[in-house]
Image (tube, rainbow, N blue to C red; front, top):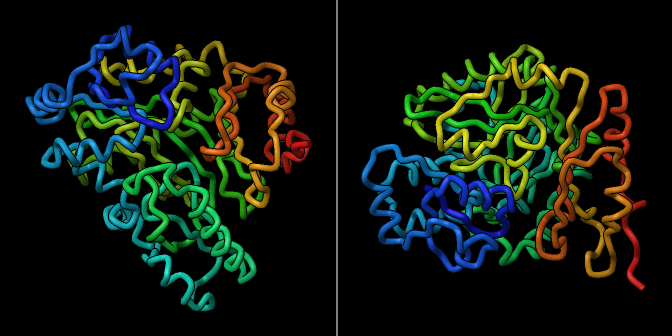
Length: 389
């Protein structure tokens, strides 16, 4: 069963829903989708009645906006409780403190942030919303100047994000201040199956242009990356599954691996894989339809999948407009940006005046041409942004 909600449902996901005839919650939004006429739409009463017939239903949603619907129609469901739990990063820190007792964090309201004494926190640290999405409101702080810039940036983001996401998805009223985790940042799409066993559908490393960069500019994957991390991540996920009932639970996990090999989770996005169209990278990069694999409880044969991809790198680029620019005064040159890449696998243009991103783009290069990706990682994007006349 699936809940399709704002702000974006990819054509690939819609076509998969039609092909598999997965029951879809009938809402005003889902009824207006391009392929709604071919979908197996169920009105809320019938949808949630069916959802409650099994203890651990196969449920997926493309968007955390669906949390409001779960709380309205099924607050007693285990999946609803898990979604609410993992969306609250302070609660997440409580459970993961059992696995990472040395990671400190503190919770503050927006008003309390203004009154904090910067010198009381060891640097570097990260400030982020208790409930967040797509790097909104996340800032790394290495010195007092960055602290002041972070507070200023958060207040600007509050104005920009008003009415874009519901409070259960992004709330810029409560924040965590926590230790900056050094190490390689890793992002995965995975699910716990009906037996509670983890199944990994993708592994990417999240690259940053600087220590203060918190954007989603570049996620990188390759056969080498998947093989390097797969088995140790499975072992770590098995530890997580022992802490909570997570059967038939799809999720997107971002974490860092420290120099000693320990994994430290940053966030778990529940009931979904990567946001917007980004979960589709599994198909474009590796031929894996993540939605089909979840609903049919399939495991990727990574040896077979990677055999023909040994010399390739795959990049997912999430491009936002630099925060110091007034979006109403500029124009993003989509054609020039797309033209930078020698092999584009997929892209979708976003309305950056309403959403956090201007474009999502998936690309492929030979390993020796990584500089093509690296150029964008370190770019200030001025070459792709024009002033309106």
